[in-house]
Image (cartoon, rainbow, N blue to C red):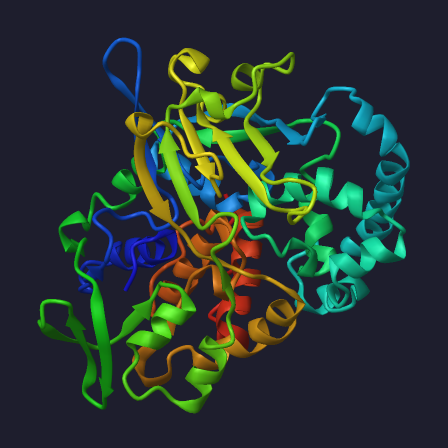
Length: 454
């Protein structure tokens, strides 16, 4: 159930054994992809170019399995940069640019860097695929909000610099509820003062999913939402919105935990307690407006439309929430294969200023899991208790972390537990991290993989 990257990863791994598994994939949306959605933007020559909406780029050093997947599928990658700019009233903060706001907050930037250095020394325990060493890191048990308080980092820096940076790649507004260790791990790759080199996939995520599903595209039923799952001793009965019921030996719920719980008929107390405890947010990144209206970008010396990947604008006046941001992804810079700023490709979240209706291409709704300390310490430890019970399995960002790499790994891990082979065992590093996150998703019973040499 669900054709996002987790569900497609599980289906792909199982489909590689056609003599052993007969799979069907149900997806409520008209196209597969989940949060990884691609839009077609008009160009000057009358044609279109594809660009992504939510999942847009990655850092290869932490996407070991996704890099292997792209290579296996023959998907070309393209270099890009994460370079943001923030407008907070009349004040401006931007990567690689000296501004009065940056100079005024120099003390906070220095304090924040001291915090990063301290936490990073302990984070060496988290940079190995070992549950034993990771558990020794004290900053796993401290929220980032508390760490910022301890290091004396001002609220102004948090609202005008740090949070506008972080909501670009965590996609929830409650970023300071994350464990300090997890928050700082992101800062190994992103910086508050300088832009970051990244990699994207040519053709958008749609091209990735098209290649991934070539062997089982006829088994993906888009536009076919499931309304209920009934578990009996002889199997799982799946009922769709048209009233059609089919029986399966096993079911993989590759959807949000709240949606999974809503499907289960007669859920157990443990299922209600754990799936119901997973929190989702649809605030800053709840609705994406896909458009070509460049008037939502500033016309100033920063040349935001020509040079920035993301523009963050404080949406209200002095009495409004200090973290109420309007966030615009400038996709002709993030995925640079069209006409550039001459043919704007824009995606705006939390749009307080609505784009010209004639320039709006689509609107999409999203939910994103909240990885706070409670989730990472309690739910990650307990959710594996549900796996396989009554022939029901779970994968997705709530079982690992909120990224394409980790959601994909959760799907591969469930497929592995059902007997499918792990496809990237020749890559020792990818295999070690697969085993680590497989245990996060499925617990101590997970069938780990021994890396192959050569």
